[in-house]
Length: 261
Image (cartoon, rainbow, N blue to C red):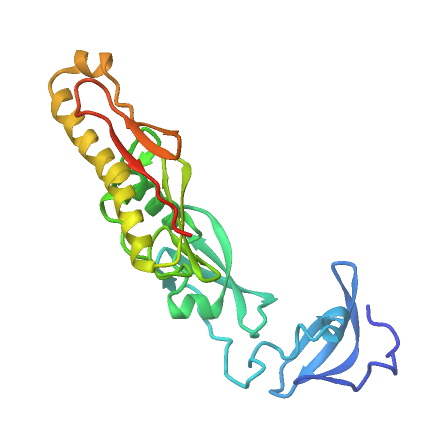
């Protein structure tokens, strides 16, 4: 049931919408019947009008591009569009209620559906993550594939893995088994890289070598594998990193850290 028109809002424009008269409340909030410039009418909550969250019937975005399309029944990856909702994103794109092949329902912006950015309710990403995790080998708290295929990085301050810039110096560190080891600060970038590569040989390359050797010995010898579980231990004594290896592998190796002022 409509009430008497509020002269403060009646006739006001909100984007492409013109407030005509009060309408029945929406979810307990006051609402208005609005007429869009395209000729359509739509009931909009007062708070959405005043908050500039809804400014058209859904026919256009803020920049004038047509957004509302009839996607009913169309399939986008694993998603099938069921019906359009009242929701709009910041760009004015309508949300569509979609049913996923896995059985879930989800509301997705029209732009995301049409562009192909969203093709499932999220189940596909979960499956991919599970698949990737199954392909990775975590041994003694370390991902073997990460050690094998590590590359120079462009997402830190130096562009090389494990080296960050601190003023006019380069801080060097290395990680393994959830631990981070500080290797000093160096004024010369090439020296910093040399220290980092030496540490990689001691820890990363040594880890891969030990793991490969253990696999060879354990193949076809289940009892031996149980009696000799793979372990790779790193200790630090008097500024040195030392790798403790079992008696079935090579002798311990050490790396002395020489800090350059």
